[in-house]
Length: 58
Image (cartoon, rainbow, N blue to C red; front, side, top):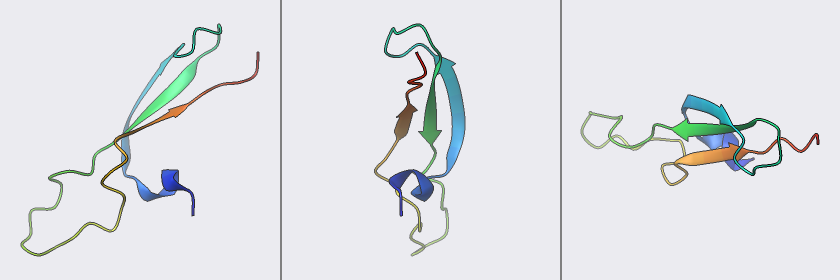
């Protein structure tokens, strides 16, 4: 399974991250301090805070 399928991606922004003239996407994973119940462990990846999706069309 891809690491990107293990997050809870709740934030997104677009910008030219790699300065190549096209828009790239950044996804933010909200995985810390989300669970408030005692002894409940999240089933998603808590170590991957962001993912950058680079647009390679140009």
